[in-house]
Length: 85
Image (cartoon, rainbow, N blue to C red):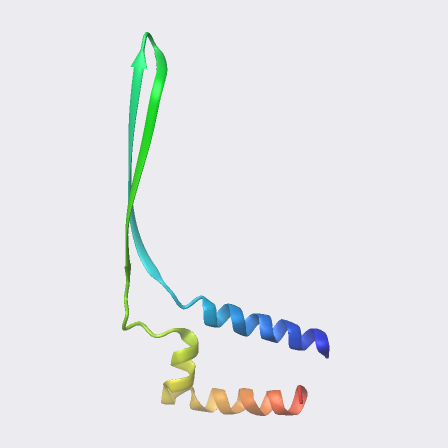
């Protein structure tokens, strides 16, 4: 029973903490300086533009606020009350 509680708590933490979905656009530029066929200096520049949609709801927020998932939340609550507590 304790193992189930630990797994359930870890699952809740993972679901809540992974709500940031970012769109990444990365460009990489490499500049190499060579003398007599040998590489003297190599520089790599990586530029990324991250955009986060602020209006996007996480799964947990959607589950708690959307009326379409109201029955699912009631059934999950009943399941937890019957089996965990």
